[in-house]
Length: 202
Image 1 (tube, rainbow, N blue to C red):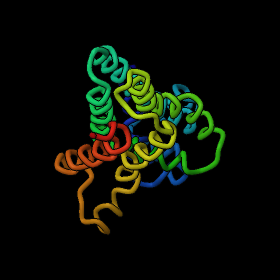
Image 2: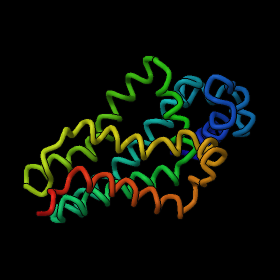
Image 3: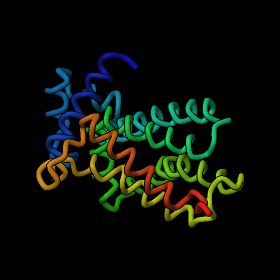
């Protein structure tokens, strides 16, 4: 991707995070990126195209990393594979916190874009967790559980701190961007999954 496009995307991500998608104009993006406003239409066909490109790039980058993770971890026990997927999702969200927050905000509004993102990307996001659980059940490593419900509860724990970082800071006095918080959240999520998935010890 050329530098002009990257500057536009970077500027848009910054402004969308500060002002929201609807609170940001094409002219503001052009000024922040130091480009002619016509270039946004030329490269992205307008503000909606910029948003769609940001979302597509975010998920495609994540899924490339997930594909690598799945190939590298294929011979590991299911719980270890699951932990490595959870760790990847957490680290990716921390590294891309503004875009993570932007996407989750846009998904909270009923729209054609939200439906497209759910169809194209969120099913794959869920699959990264659900597939490991299903394979663990098939291998006898995990108990038989309602996989979709476990995946939903796991997603809720992983996403909320990055969707609402201000409330996490001001209400719970925790810093979601910190490594300490990420380590704690990983342990918390894995304890939840272990409680549901691991067979009871006789």
